[in-house]
Image 1 (tube, rainbow, N blue to C red):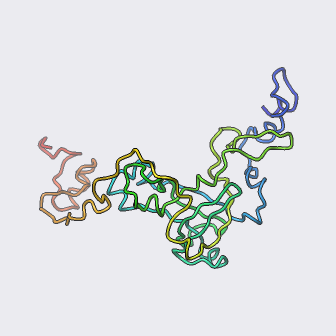
Image 2: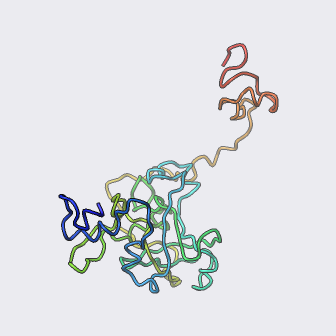
Image 3: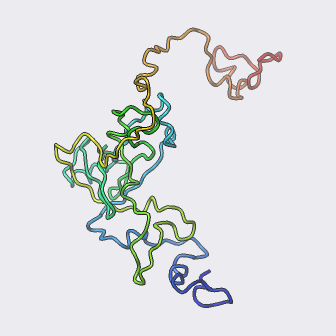
Length: 259
């Protein structure tokens, strides 16, 4: 590809794409400055912003699971404590997260296990009101947020006036991890709820009960009938001599052939 972009061979890419292909289609992995970082003023937007997906809520539809919602129903922006101190931000503050494309509001959680020049949050938690049958006052849509709102789908036009997708030039993967932002503390009047707040879906029925309390009546009283999970994962023989109550055998079958 690079040789073709340099004018070699019978098949060559269009002239407007040659510089891009020659720069990024390297036969071996290389590092290059992310497109957005190359375009924006990094002094104005000094922080990298990333999003990750929690394993217990990998997709948005996880909000239909009442037990999973009790684990995470609101995402927060994780900031290094030293960076937050420089910005005059304390734990649980509400802040504006702003890129060249827009801004979104979220609540802060201070940590030390992150690069001081990087902030991150869980994705797939913030929801539009009415989505997934959640109550209108659900924390997902009132306190949760998405960085998607401040990630542009396209890059700024180049010198020739061409506009390219804001994505990896080789694979086409959306550039979720190229985002640059600045953080500022919200006023007292702005704190407590996320923005932008989109109009609620009107055609989706809401839940008929406060599902976040589902299971609250379960006490977990031991009935004497349960067995350790190690009984069922194929290592019955190894655990039989170490854990009381496990019968020798293999997998779900004890010696003698009974399950």
